[in-house]
Length: 463
Image (cartoon, rainbow, N blue to C red; front, side, top):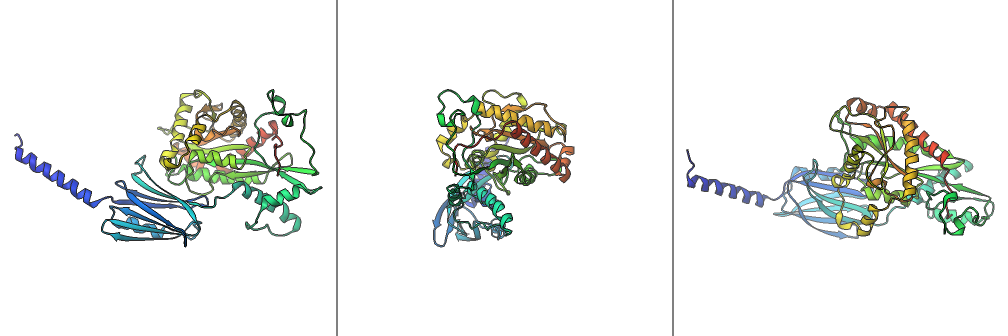
């Protein structure tokens, strides 16, 4: 029986009235999250519609006021107040109120001056619309200085029989420079590492860098070469990575493995030179891919090892893999698929595209060098051999593809997929502390084997 035109008209008016009600209601807050870290604290507000905001930063006392339009205060938004942790290095408290009929005011009280970034993210993966408040310390931390402080504490505390000095050292770099100028004292050598062998330098290399023209002798009797290994636990914060059938999150497993490996590295040395591990993240927060590369370069790392746990559509896939960068095509369709999947981390974790420097973006697309890739393949082979001794390998060789996180031009860089978290048996292994220790031992042996075949060169600048 055909529907009367009047019925169609009534139905249309009903739909229009529903849309008007929805429009008047505005957005509905679905969830709120806080990710505290020393690097920065992220506050995420997730809603079923885009949010329009205006914000003001007040310097004294430091606080950030954010007015969110078209929003009604609800239980999810009120929950934000209780999520603030006493240990948060940036936020001391949050206040929320219905400022007007259609405006919610959010005031974030801060422990120190910050440089805030406020931006929105479109729906992706399991997330709806997100409003992100990234609270960066106005005075950025110097990770290299922290590594030097740690090493100085190790050297001075045992000798003096005193506890290690606190973090409140005024100028550790200045102290090292002063030591370097005194005869008979050791100095720590720190400068960007070279991936080239001295006996294979191309013609035209400045004479000071060539083996037949050694640098002038220092007035020190000994030099300590700090060897830095950057460890990169994948994903974090808003980006959980792959999730196993038992609910195990990749970001949690790889952080635990990275911390275990950090402890092993910090207790080791190469040819008498101390080693120090640097984590691109040491807690549950998100780090954009290019920032992971930048962090490794800031600490002048000798190696970069990104740690992940693989996943596939079916639970049958199994085994560990090691990847290096490729300047051209991927070594296999699986490697290309894996790189595309890992490179999407920024979309899920959420980056502020408005602050991305165009020059940096272009550089990331073409930062690879033949020497870096060659050394990365050697490092990957050493790791793969050792990993194969404690578990099954997915592929017997190092695979190559365009992983954004491996694009440091001067640091041998690899990405290790420790196992398939999507495989129930391997998920259980990844949760096992015994297997985590076996895997950590294997990675440590692989790193030491690489250095035994490729001794770290003396850096070309000393402090």
